[in-house]
Image (tube, rainbow, N blue to C red):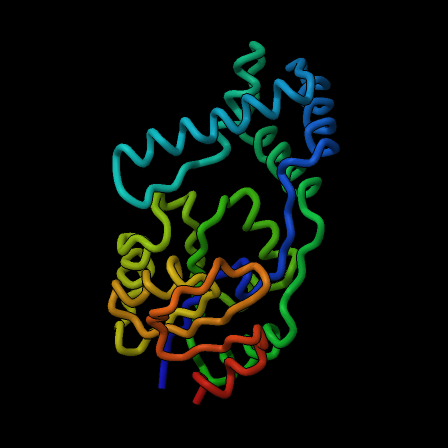
Length: 239
């Protein structure tokens, strides 16, 4: 059937809940910045963070469609505003702390490990195509034990582009020399994952989970699982 299986991550393989607005997060981030000599109160830090994120995204969008920013630039700028130099390792640590404190929980959906094992036993190639920040996502992939299953991992912040843009899909197709007729995209977002795959000439499977965006009526996937039961995917697309 298919030789190559390309997965979205969050909401597809991984169930995650985050809250970047909570007071506790910004109290702790202000405290950590302060320990490094960059003195903020939580409100100033929070306001500047979201301001810089928006500005960076606007700049990227002005240059090309479906652009992705590198969030580490924002964390570094927050140090620089207070006259503090921060090296790459410090920025990486701060991003991990930010992600940890803002995350309520993170876990694999039931059936993910079994399906991954089944794919590898049948000699299938498995890839990740995720709209995400690498300093958040790569540690989470390892923490969840997913890294050993992937033959290739593409993260939007590293590539400078994101789904549903065709450029991001072409990254995985070209880099790993995948034939479109042998490749399927699996994801929980009807626009980024499904419409994006359709425009790139790929078959797809849509799974609707609790954190899926609202489902569009003209779903362009070849297969669908509308009740969020990941275990049903194997019967549909693995032969």
